[in-house]
Length: 277
Image (tube, rainbow, N blue to C red; front, side, top):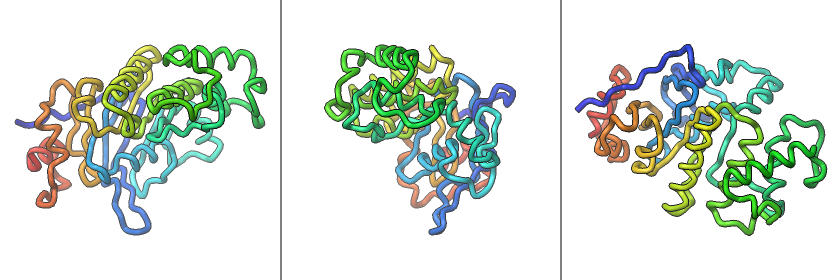
């Protein structure tokens, strides 16, 4: 059975990727001629084997990696064509959640959350009282939203992994992001915590009308949680479909041995995945 390829109108695009490729100096082609459009407010799971290009793709969307060719537009701005100042301004609208949380362990939860607002402030801030009262109240509000208000003044390094990721999400919310990128945010968490974190991200996306791109390995979670699945193999898009319209067998084909599979660049994503299945 062919997988229906997702199509989106470009007029409401939050993210638009056109013929995007990234080749590193060592010769590794991490992302290979990738194209897709994500409309505003959609929650997308990006799946694929380790080394399939998921993290590199995420980092190009945030300007951490420059593309070798093609272009990536976020909120109507071509990332590779921005000046450093323009990129800093754009990044204030792009939240990024990392696998390893990225918290400062010796700082309290509220201090870590407040660092999410640094892009809108001038000068360094040392300690909670160095931030405006309005931002302190907002940080507490976000901690309450992620269920950690009681731990606001607890050191981050005393929290569990799931709690740390909740703090990281609250920190991202301080940016008021329109797009949220999450690079394997539940890879180091247990199954229960993973499901809770993903449900929290989906709930916040609905409340804030955020567009979410989240790289994952957990196929069952991705199917039940996301609106849409984009599957990568060897840097190429081989699956792009609405989550509820694609079978578990089709998605699991992303993780089969591809040593004998040589997808043609002229194939549609559904044809590539059929060849692999």
